[in-house]
Image 1 (tube, rainbow, N blue to C red):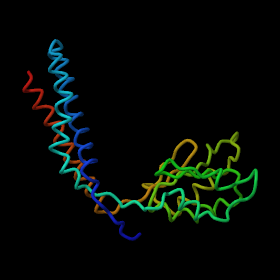
Image 2: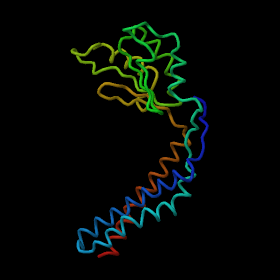
Image 3: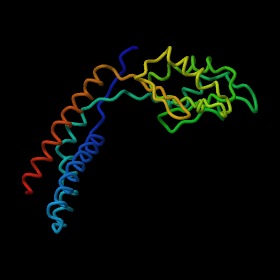
Image 4: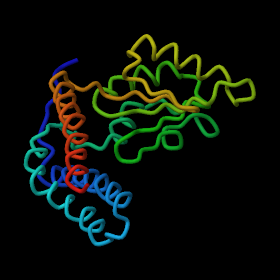
Length: 210
């Protein structure tokens, strides 16, 4: 797969992420305060409200430099419908307008009623490099409308994608884009820093309030 273009997440998302981390830290300290000094209600409110603001201000500029894949200017649903052009099988059978939906980011394709399941997968699988696609395949149980559909789709997707890109749900299988190695390493570094910093900071705050 070619290297995906990236862009900074931006200051606003960075501030939101920093505020969320501050909220986590403040809530942890507020919980400690409530357990040790339940009568200090103002301190509890202060901890919950102060640290989100501090987190957004201090961590926002740093977190805003994180990168994310550049989204296409064409909505995923339009690109999917274009890829599936000519696949309609008529009224009462599989049609793109009735079997393809989107929430803005993830595209959901219902594969029931189609006699061209493999061709639909072949046409849409390349799009999963850019946005998630969730294939609705049913439970695969004997009482299902098409009990063989789930197994058929799984066998095709297993040949095309590693398990790390698959998310299997009760009635669906979702294929997500593969992040470039640079973004995966960036995410790992941030997660490690948070895993180390937040418990230490919470413990120091607990010592201060004892």
